[in-house]
Image 1 (tube, rainbow, N blue to C red):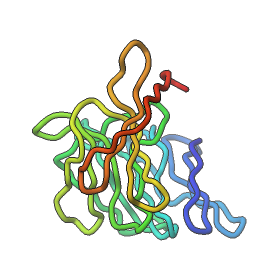
Image 2: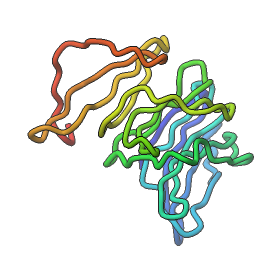
Image 3: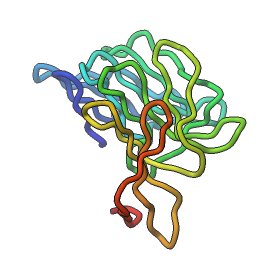
Image 4: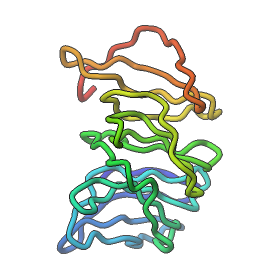
Length: 179
Protein backbone atom coordinates (compact mmCIF):
# COMPACT_ATOMS: atom_id res chain seq x y z
CA UNK A 1 0.00 0.00 0.00
CA UNK A 2 0.93 3.67 -0.42
CA UNK A 3 4.16 3.43 -2.45
CA UNK A 4 6.51 6.44 -2.35
CA UNK A 5 9.80 7.02 -4.17
CA UNK A 6 12.86 8.48 -2.48
CA UNK A 7 16.25 8.55 -4.18
CA UNK A 8 16.72 5.10 -5.74
CA UNK A 9 14.32 3.32 -3.37
CA UNK A 10 10.62 2.60 -3.29
CA UNK A 11 9.05 2.64 0.19
CA UNK A 12 5.67 1.03 0.86
CA UNK A 13 3.43 -0.40 3.57
CA UNK A 14 2.73 -4.11 3.71
CA UNK A 15 1.73 -6.77 6.20
CA UNK A 16 3.42 -10.12 6.57
CA UNK A 17 1.99 -12.07 9.46
CA UNK A 18 0.71 -9.92 12.33
CA UNK A 19 1.04 -6.15 12.17
CA UNK A 20 1.98 -3.70 9.46
CA UNK A 21 5.47 -3.01 8.27
CA UNK A 22 7.38 -0.45 6.27
CA UNK A 23 9.19 -2.00 3.34
CA UNK A 24 11.88 -0.74 0.98
CA UNK A 25 12.62 -1.96 -2.52
CA UNK A 26 16.18 -1.14 -3.55
CA UNK A 27 18.16 -2.72 -6.39
CA UNK A 28 15.31 -5.18 -6.96
CA UNK A 29 15.47 -6.49 -3.37
CA UNK A 30 12.57 -5.97 -0.93
CA UNK A 31 13.33 -5.67 2.77
CA UNK A 32 11.18 -4.88 5.78
CA UNK A 33 12.83 -1.94 7.51
CA UNK A 34 10.31 -1.24 10.29
CA UNK A 35 7.64 -3.37 11.94
CA UNK A 36 4.72 -2.05 13.99
CA UNK A 37 4.79 -3.69 17.40
CA UNK A 38 1.19 -3.18 18.50
CA UNK A 39 -0.10 -0.54 16.11
CA UNK A 40 -0.73 -0.27 12.43
CA UNK A 41 0.71 2.14 9.91
CA UNK A 42 -2.26 3.76 8.20
CA UNK A 43 -0.57 6.74 6.54
CA UNK A 44 1.73 6.67 3.51
CA UNK A 45 5.45 6.92 4.27
CA UNK A 46 7.22 10.13 3.23
CA UNK A 47 10.65 9.57 1.73
CA UNK A 48 13.26 12.31 1.80
CA UNK A 49 14.16 13.60 -1.67
CA UNK A 50 17.51 11.82 -1.65
CA UNK A 51 16.02 8.62 -0.20
CA UNK A 52 18.33 8.63 2.83
CA UNK A 53 15.48 8.97 5.35
CA UNK A 54 11.82 8.12 5.61
CA UNK A 55 9.11 9.61 7.81
CA UNK A 56 6.15 7.64 9.11
CA UNK A 57 3.18 8.40 11.30
CA UNK A 58 3.00 6.00 14.25
CA UNK A 59 0.65 5.78 17.19
CA UNK A 60 2.32 6.46 20.53
CA UNK A 61 0.39 6.76 23.78
CA UNK A 62 -2.88 6.96 21.85
CA UNK A 63 -1.75 9.79 19.55
CA UNK A 64 -0.23 9.87 16.09
CA UNK A 65 3.37 11.07 16.08
CA UNK A 66 5.83 11.93 13.31
CA UNK A 67 8.90 9.69 13.32
CA UNK A 68 11.85 9.63 10.98
CA UNK A 69 14.51 7.00 10.44
CA UNK A 70 17.36 6.19 8.13
CA UNK A 71 16.35 4.45 4.90
CA UNK A 72 17.47 1.12 6.33
CA UNK A 73 15.18 1.51 9.37
CA UNK A 74 17.87 2.46 11.88
CA UNK A 75 18.14 5.61 14.01
CA UNK A 76 14.38 6.08 14.44
CA UNK A 77 13.30 9.11 16.43
CA UNK A 78 10.15 11.09 17.08
CA UNK A 79 9.96 14.70 15.89
CA UNK A 80 7.83 17.37 17.58
CA UNK A 81 6.20 15.07 20.17
CA UNK A 82 3.88 17.89 21.31
CA UNK A 83 2.06 17.71 17.94
CA UNK A 84 -0.56 15.00 17.45
CA UNK A 85 -0.50 14.32 13.71
CA UNK A 86 -3.84 14.38 11.95
CA UNK A 87 -4.83 11.38 9.85
CA UNK A 88 -5.23 11.96 6.16
CA UNK A 89 -7.80 9.39 5.18
CA UNK A 90 -5.42 7.78 2.71
CA UNK A 91 -3.71 10.95 1.51
CA UNK A 92 -0.34 12.14 2.68
CA UNK A 93 -0.04 13.47 6.24
CA UNK A 94 3.54 14.60 5.78
CA UNK A 95 5.80 15.78 2.95
CA UNK A 96 9.54 16.55 2.90
CA UNK A 97 10.93 19.89 1.82
CA UNK A 98 12.97 19.50 -1.38
CA UNK A 99 16.16 20.35 0.57
CA UNK A 100 15.42 17.57 3.10
CA UNK A 101 15.71 19.99 6.05
CA UNK A 102 12.09 19.92 7.21
CA UNK A 103 8.75 18.19 6.89
CA UNK A 104 5.34 19.80 6.41
CA UNK A 105 2.54 18.10 8.31
CA UNK A 106 -0.89 18.77 9.78
CA UNK A 107 -1.73 18.15 13.40
CA UNK A 108 -2.82 19.60 16.70
CA UNK A 109 -0.72 21.20 19.43
CA UNK A 110 -1.71 23.18 22.55
CA UNK A 111 -2.99 26.02 20.31
CA UNK A 112 -5.23 23.74 18.22
CA UNK A 113 -5.11 22.27 14.73
CA UNK A 114 -2.81 23.62 12.06
CA UNK A 115 -0.15 23.19 9.42
CA UNK A 116 3.42 22.89 10.70
CA UNK A 117 6.94 22.97 9.29
CA UNK A 118 9.00 20.62 11.43
CA UNK A 119 12.81 20.86 11.12
CA UNK A 120 14.40 17.41 11.07
CA UNK A 121 17.39 18.64 13.10
CA UNK A 122 15.23 18.83 16.24
CA UNK A 123 14.58 22.58 16.30
CA UNK A 124 11.11 23.75 17.32
CA UNK A 125 8.24 23.31 14.85
CA UNK A 126 6.82 26.39 13.13
CA UNK A 127 3.06 26.87 12.80
CA UNK A 128 2.35 28.00 9.23
CA UNK A 129 -1.46 28.09 9.26
CA UNK A 130 -4.27 27.38 11.71
CA UNK A 131 -7.44 25.36 11.40
CA UNK A 132 -8.50 21.87 10.37
CA UNK A 133 -6.23 21.37 7.34
CA UNK A 134 -5.04 18.35 5.33
CA UNK A 135 -2.55 16.82 2.91
CA UNK A 136 0.37 19.27 2.68
CA UNK A 137 2.62 19.06 -0.39
CA UNK A 138 5.83 21.03 -1.04
CA UNK A 139 6.44 22.53 -4.47
CA UNK A 140 9.51 21.08 -6.25
CA UNK A 141 11.44 24.35 -5.79
CA UNK A 142 10.60 24.53 -2.06
CA UNK A 143 8.98 27.98 -2.20
CA UNK A 144 5.37 26.90 -1.66
CA UNK A 145 3.37 24.42 0.39
CA UNK A 146 -0.15 23.67 -0.82
CA UNK A 147 -2.72 21.97 1.38
CA UNK A 148 -6.42 21.33 1.75
CA UNK A 149 -8.50 23.72 3.80
CA UNK A 150 -11.50 22.98 6.02
CA UNK A 151 -14.25 20.74 4.65
CA UNK A 152 -17.27 22.73 3.48
CA UNK A 153 -20.16 20.93 1.79
CA UNK A 154 -18.06 17.83 1.11
CA UNK A 155 -15.33 19.89 -0.59
CA UNK A 156 -12.04 21.47 0.43
CA UNK A 157 -10.33 24.56 -0.91
CA UNK A 158 -6.77 24.38 -2.16
CA UNK A 159 -4.67 26.77 -0.07
CA UNK A 160 -1.02 27.81 -0.11
CA UNK A 161 1.65 29.21 2.20
CA UNK A 162 5.35 30.00 1.98
CA UNK A 163 7.75 28.09 4.27
CA UNK A 164 8.02 31.23 6.44
CA UNK A 165 4.22 31.28 7.00
CA UNK A 166 3.34 33.98 4.45
CA UNK A 167 -0.07 33.09 2.93
CA UNK A 168 -0.21 32.76 -0.86
CA UNK A 169 -3.37 33.57 -2.73
CA UNK A 170 -4.21 30.76 -5.14
CA UNK A 171 -6.96 30.56 -7.75
CA UNK A 172 -10.23 29.29 -6.31
CA UNK A 173 -9.91 25.51 -6.58
CA UNK A 174 -12.25 23.17 -4.74
CA UNK A 175 -11.61 19.47 -4.42
CA UNK A 176 -14.22 16.93 -3.44
CA UNK A 177 -13.42 14.57 -0.61
CA UNK A 178 -11.70 11.46 -1.90
CA UNK A 179 -11.00 13.17 -5.24
